[in-house]
Image (cartoon, rainbow, N blue to C red; front, side, top):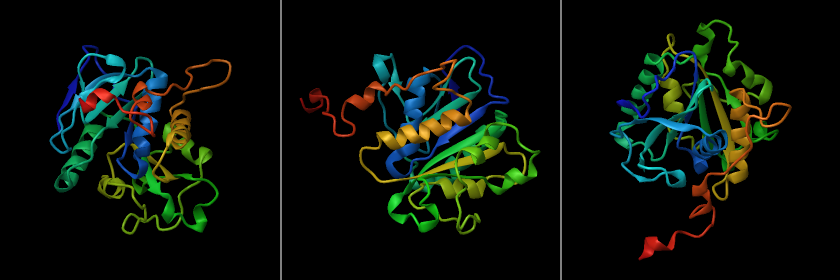
Length: 255
């Protein structure tokens, strides 16, 4: 999976955080990333070839030149994190290759931490997870790292830990896409500190769910919506206003 930068400015990946939304229940991770990209003013800084994903293209937000591709990377100068945006699912026969490519990219670029976002099917929610719809999970390889003082270390203070069957061999994450397979594939050493945000959700108008997840991601990344130094205010992408959540489609699509 080759990466192609779309900027001439060198990208300082080392010692930054990579956010990976998994195609899962309600595509919640993608919606949260959409909100953060639009609200913080992130720019597309690179694209990946789509050999492992269903090939789709579309127009870019706000009429920007070029096309939207299945897998893109967003960043902004002065912000120590990058947001991956995956716009089409992985081809079933290519899941292992795609996961290996993701892991290889995170290792080679020397990210200091990785934050994975995944939705869970609310109909499978059990009694242990009735306190809140959102939880965190820390993969076991983190134990081999030095005590973390980075973004991942803040998860336990923000949201409860996901409980129940958390051993990677029989991890129960309903409708979480490749989340389990990705976590099982993480190398025991040599991989950045990793955290997972899991949120129970039903399919439908998921804007409020996306705001909840995006708020938590923003706090993990050190963004502040409120307070003395206002860094950003929430702004929904323009694409949400057409053909999404019951809004009318562009009628020119139908001739």
